[in-house]
Image (cartoon, rainbow over all chains, first blue to last red; front, side, top):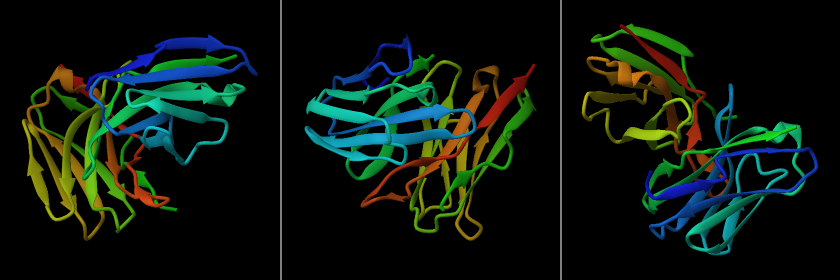
Length: 113
Length: 114
């Protein structure tokens, strides 16, 4: 699992509530990513980070924000959850600056009712 | 826009046979390709990768072939086993903004029949 822990593993919430998902790594890698996975769409990049306090948007960043105040933690926040954000969320790390290979966590199943 | 896709969404093979999973890509600027396996309820797991300066790369029971002329990538699994049943994704390192990021296909469900 490349030392990646995602929490929670499952969450059910109501529309309009804030939600924060956590990704924790134990190996001090610089690059961390958040993806969402939906049927028919594969994995789509939400946000990524290339260092503490350094983040950038992916292709589906609307409605999401991220924070990285320390190397080991990358937080994904849904400020006001919507039903369209029901998905499985995966965190990933990149271990080599010169190689785009990613290692993924086990995912968080989020249901917004 | 650029996209990575798969020819077949599902594939069923007999145990012991070889499996071939195909992937088409359209971004001619991509220079790195990767295959992942995802079992139910788990995160994607790296299988094998290949750079565009290679046509073929072999791992343990798996081979990736890259045909840049027709922008085609394939994953071959030798002597398919029940544990190979999973969804398989290809990805390419297209440009996203100012940096290269992996772009994933939608996946092929491989089912191994006894």
